[in-house]
Length: 186
Image (cartoon, rainbow, N blue to C red; front, side, top):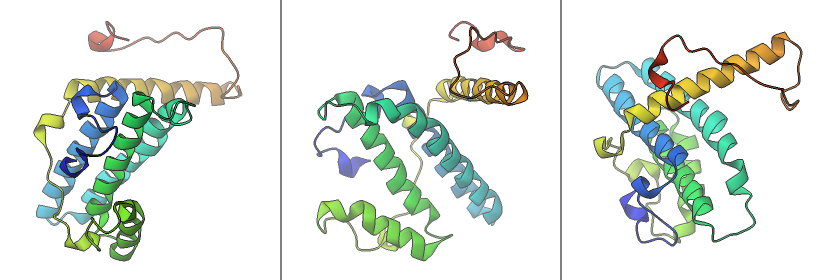
């Protein structure tokens, strides 16, 4: 992320929306887990961690960011923050997957970094492997988002069981938490 700081519209992660901070925090946890697992020669476990992150990024972050991505105001800071967060996640993810899928990661890298007109390295394999940044971790936020994602998943399952379409509005939803730790903010 340090290489982006001089770019237009870039803001520090701490100044961004909660969803952006969650994505960056999850990215940092994934970097830590992948590195730790690969150091133990557990490449399968490392690949599973990458898969979990990609699932969260595409099925939670991108879906929740659609409105701001499609916002009419091209200078809207929330829109720019969302784009920067997604870009940072994708660039770092490309570095993370490089040992697993070398040719694909290089192709993705070139597509992502070509906008810098040669300022980026020609190959992802010439970059340093990502190191996690503890200052970007937000474990309480990750726990809250995990709870929200679980509620959304259970809601989707309940809709499927009742044969209700996902876009059909409901009169109401009742959520009963077994653990009341998150009840105050929910």
